[in-house]
Image 1: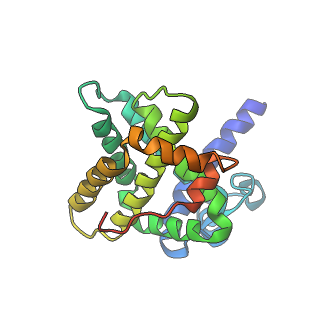
Image 2: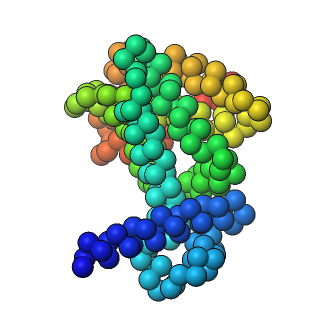
Length: 221
């Protein structure tokens, strides 16, 4: 019985997620976006409350995780063996942006939500998870310090690319794809960056704390 209940809750959660993300175009990541989704789906409000008990924060986390999971699955299914590591990473970052392309306004709303100081821990958590999904998707098996440096550096690339993409009004997003290549060329030289990052990380209780303090490069990249 519990398994059936879990399956029903997961199905309802997915339905609310789809409808609520559409609503964020107008309402942003607010309780109203969720409430309107529940109303339009004609769901029992009390039961629907179980889907996202944390409200907008849970909604945004669920959306981000669903995008990450889709990117990782696509990367794992792709034939990347002939690509250099940097090309694989660039493909992962591009895929993550492309997954949001149909919801660009919602992505902007999400960025504004995460920019609030009280949401800094969530922003750090989601940035790190996105970077981890890309690295795992391209087959990274690093451990210990190397694991964290790769994800911290890539989290900065992903976030700065998203910020650049928000201002890219071109039809094919080519300026954004060029930006990815520049950022990876400049930032993803892991051997050179390790010493500096290691020094910063050693002073922090967790990698998430660092992400909240990172300053991202300007659009000129």
